[in-house]
Amino acid sequence: MSALPSSVEMQFHRIVWSEECDAMKLEFTKMQGAGNDYIYLDCRHSGVPADAAQWAALLSRRRFSVGADGLICIAPPQLSDGDATMVMFNADGSEGAMCGNGIRCVAEYLYTHGVQKELIELDTRQAGRKTLYRVGEHRWRAGMGRFSTRAADLPAVGLGAGPLLEVPLVAAGQSWQVSCVSMGNPHCVVFCNEAPPAGVQLADWGAAVENHPAFPQGINVEFVQAESPTSLTTTVWERGSGATLACGTGACAAAVVGVLRGICPRETPIDVRLPGGTLTVRVLQDDTVLLTGPAETVFDGYVEV
Ligand SMILES: N[C@H](CCC[C@H](N)C(=O)O)C(=O)O
Image 1: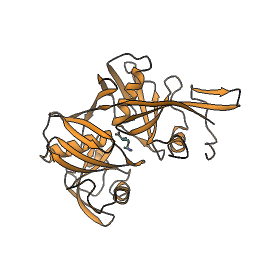
Image 2: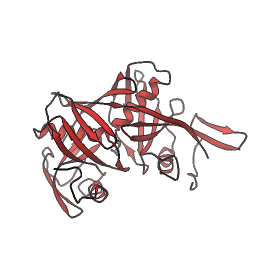
Image 3: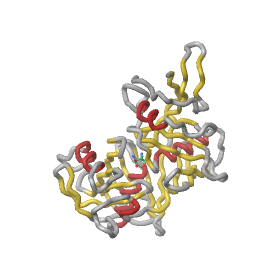
Image 4: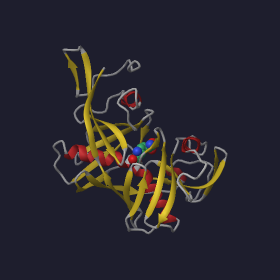
């Protein structure tokens, strides 16, 4: 494991000095939602450590460390009536504004660690408050707030001023009609005959769109195939993490574009089938979105550093 960030601060309340091995133990909980796995740190007493981004990049490395799509700090709530704040980092250490699979797992973590409530209020640093409803064993519904297709909310440049529903985009030698949606974080959705289209390498096209000049802060990319009006098959390339088995906000973005393009119905549950599992999305008349899916604990562990 390469050298730790030199300025690692002993802010984690769950870092304990281990006498027997004269090392520092960083305790964590590994959780996943439809295979989108993160390392969760309980920072409710200590606050988000200054080195969280470095820890995310260090510990997310598969085979060389714990391995994950990123790291999520469970921090104190922004407002007194909240239960906690989710602060998420992608595998490259970049901070994501919102994480649909992560927010359900934070609710599950709190529920299994003393917050015995079926309705949990979670804050985020950039995407506002989310309300989580426990709908079954290890299963939560998240109120994801309203979507937006405005360039300013993504942000996107040079793609036009109106709703970015059908914009031409050339990347990796391919030209596509893409739809851009913000779920608090930016998504580029491509409806196609198969997801991903034959002959298109997700890693090539995904990375090319993620880093396209039209998206100065990067973007998450979804290829979507409509099996029926209420069943979408989707593959994902995530900003800052690459190909993941599922993306909660990406599932919402796919369903939203399906509704706005008249492919999917509003209000009706839409199954978004991802490589890691199925998430269910409802796009309501007022443009708010509900995301339902699993939230599972994989293991508790610690890293000696
Ligand atoms: N990569 C995303 C954050 C994680 C989103 C995804 N894991 C989800 O479940 O919504 C971004 O940088 O906007």
